[in-house]
Image 1 (cartoon, rainbow, N blue to C red):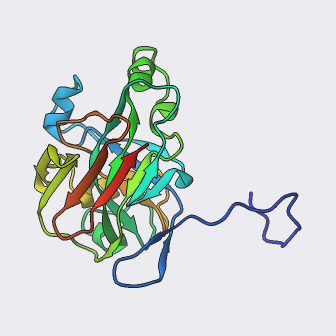
Image 2: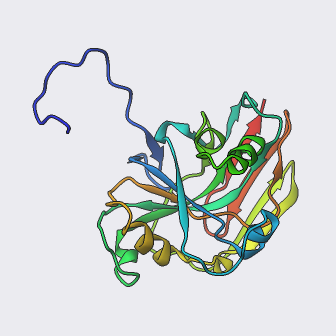
Length: 231
């Protein structure tokens, strides 16, 4: 349990993780990152899954794995199959547990474009051995994100990912199996949600490998892009 007293720390606490917000110099404080697996039927099929509307499943990334748009990052270690996954990200400004789908929009503070970078070979190995995905999904600099745009709702629009200007993924947000309200409601039955939580809502078909020197950009209608270059 966390202490309520201000005892001295044995070493300096890590800096708080915060993200830029569109239209202001105020920043969004990040608490946790949750990610939804296989939330578009076409991606479920390409990954060998059943595209029917089974309950969503989740994995996590560390908050300090976030990468702001425009950054250049190194090709990660321990992989030879480094993949992009373009996604819509939901930023929560309120928390709750056992939230209904009708109540869920009230928890949303804003939205952003994001990229769930993945060491696909490590993920495939983990799946085959029935092991956790942590090292394939939650490694350093694995969560690219654009500016957070305030607003509880986001109209249906196009999600698009390009690599060096060539379109590699494209879909409409309405093609998600579980919409934002459904994702929040289900997740709130598993954990107590809190302000500062981010939810990466899943990727459509077309995931693929990134190479050194390439620039990958995720865009969502109405939001700022999330771009990253691989050194």
